[in-house]
Image (cartoon, rainbow, N blue to C red; front, side, top):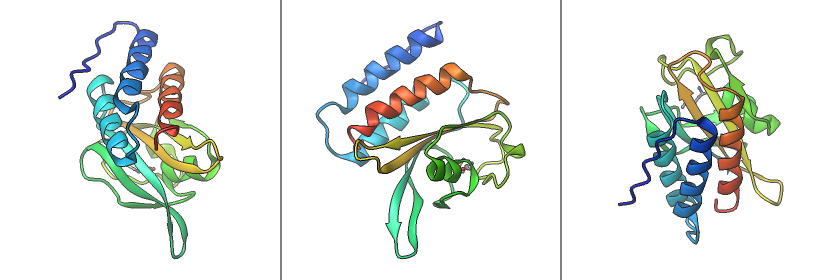
Length: 164
Ligand code: SME
């Protein structure tokens, strides 16, 4: 088992260490499920104040693309999310980061866990411009995620885009 416990008082240092631990975990491993699973576990173990951390994958179905639940840590969650629906669906449809201080004020928010109050969703886009997945972090705290969390998680998404 890898021991990647990261303890840093400074958030910037913590995200730098987290990025380097993630690089170490996924380097040379081509299996996307394994990489998402380890990324979810590492983020869950490192970032305080989360009640869910994981991935929804962009999957092509008979009726078009939708988000389908991927590896995660936390309570069992909604399995399928349509593009444009909820925080994850909007991130997928617009390919833009969604940082939501109060999910209950977000139109169409999908309440998988009523304990969630704030959320950060980062789209992961491959070098070909195709959306691969979204990284979804939920917190029971209001306004848990700030601009530094957003930048840190976008950097994690960039690392993952090369190995998913
Ligand atoms: N709250 C999300 C749904 C996914 S769960 O939080 C795991 C949303 O509205 O996209």
